[in-house]
Image (cartoon, rainbow, N blue to C red; front, side, top):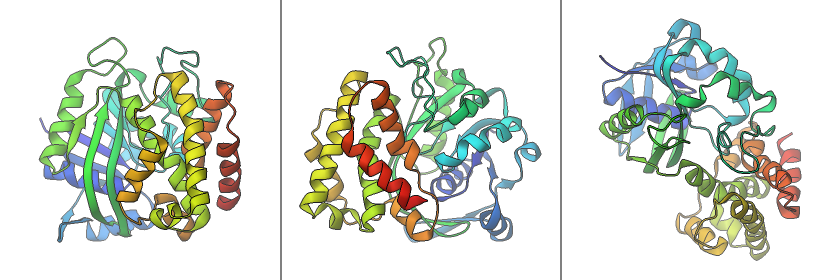
Length: 326
C-alpha cells in the first residue's frame, strides 16, 4: 500500500520535501493557507532545481478534510506551531509518525533526556505545552536540514544548494519509548528516491544543537545588521560578538553533554566558506515577517537560566532582536 505524508506548511523546505515524496510515489497532502494555498491549487506545487522546474499536484485541505496519514512533517515557522498544534489532531492516528522540521530547539528536546532538566518544557519553544500534548512522544522523529531553498513566489521554490537532510529518533532505535527503525528507514528510502540525500542520525539532539550553534548567532545578527554573512563577519567587532555568544552556548553544551569538537572560530570559518548568503531571519525581516527568535536564541537563553549559566552576550542580542522584530 502506498504510504501517505502530510506536509504542514508549504514554504521553502516543506515544498522541497513534498516534491521529493511525490517523486518517490507517495501520496502527498499539504496543509497550507493564503497565497500559497491559492497558488498551489491553481498552478500546482513548483520546485526548481538544477535548471528544471517540476510541478506536482498534492492534495490540499484542512487537517479534518485530509484525515489520518502515516507521516506528518511539521515545516512551518516554529513560532506558529504552538497555536497550530491542536488543529492538527485529525492528521494523527494511532500509528502516525510526526517529524519536526522547524528551526531551533524542538518541543521534544528534553523528553527522556536523562539530565537535570529532563522532561522540562521550554516556554520559549512550547508555551503552555500544546505541542507536547498534541504530538505522540513515542512516535516522534527529529530532523536537521542542511540545504538552501528559497521561495521565488507562493507555491514556487528554488533549491539553491542541497547537502543533506538528517533524520533521527530522540530515543534509541527500536527501544521502549523511541520510534521504531521501520518508519525511519521508510522515510530515508523515500527521500533518497526523491533526490534528497537523507541520512540517519545516531544522536539527533547533538545534530540539532550543532546546527543551532551557528544559527543562533548568524540569524539574529544578520537581521540586526541587515547584512549577508560574509559582510557581517568581516567586521572584527561583530565576529568577536559571535565568538562570545558561541562560547556562552558551549558552556550549556558542556553541562548537557552536547559539546561539539570544533572551536567557535572554526565554526565561523565554515560559515565564511559558504559565501555571502542571506540568512532566513534576514529574509524575514526584509519582508516584514515575524522572526524565529525564541525557538533559536530565546531557547538557548532559557536553557542557560535553568542551568544557572550567565549569558550576557546572548541576552543582549536577544533583547535587540526582539525589539527589531516587534
